[in-house]
Every structure is written in structure tokens, then in C-alpha cells.
Image (cartoon, rainbow, N blue to C red; front, side, top):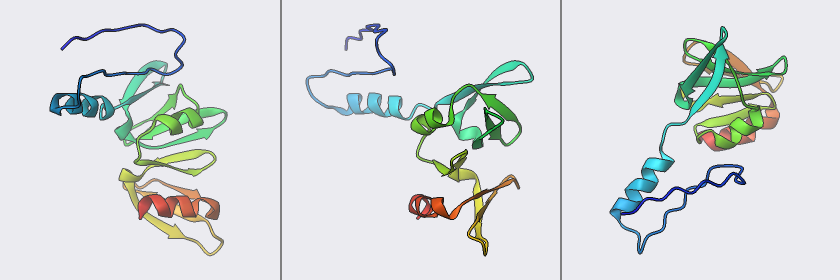
Length: 143
């Protein structure tokens, strides 16, 4: 098998193209490895640059014109915009408001209040809320 690398500075996002005579187990394995590669997010904490795997994030939210990523142990200021993160995060992340994305793997329970707000409780005892407007999207992803 030959492997070539071609740099293209005009690309906005990285693009990987595999060319083969036919699809086989080896090619399928390469595709799975590329697609399932755990992505990480980069940010700062106490003037240190950190990189955390996406699966470590419980929730990501915006406040004070900054994007924060919350893990089980720390809160990191991320270097990306929320809409950029929404596009690259895996399917276990769901947008619950204009300012927040959550990881459903850390979801403990949902509570619907009388005024239509959804209280979202996480396994690490944190909580957040979402409006009725996002309820159909949340239900669709969870059911």
C-alpha cells in the first residue's frame, strides 16, 4: 500500500481521500480508525494551555463572551466558538439552548417545571436548564 501526503493551504477543513481498487477489510479498518479517532478540544486554565478529549466534557457553554468547557474536575476557557464546536462534536453532544451544548453521556435526569423550563441534572451533581423550544430536539436525540 502506498501512502501520499499533499498539502493544500486553500482547504478550510482537513480532507482525507482514500483511493483503492476496491473496498476491502483493510480499507474499512482505516476508515473506522480515522472516523473514531477521539477528538480533543484546546483551551486555557490558569494561563496554561490544555488539550482535553471531547468525551471528558460534561457541558460547553458561553458566558461573558467566552466559551467554557466543563469536565468532571475543571472548567477550561476554550479557543473555539460554540457554533464551531457544535459542528465538530460527536453525536453524544446536543445543543440545549443558544448558549449551551451538553454531553448526554453525563446526563442523570430531566425535570419539566410548571413554567416550561427543563431542568437538566448531570451525574456530577451540576445542573442547567433549557427552554421548551429545545424540548423536541432533546427528545429526538434521547429517544
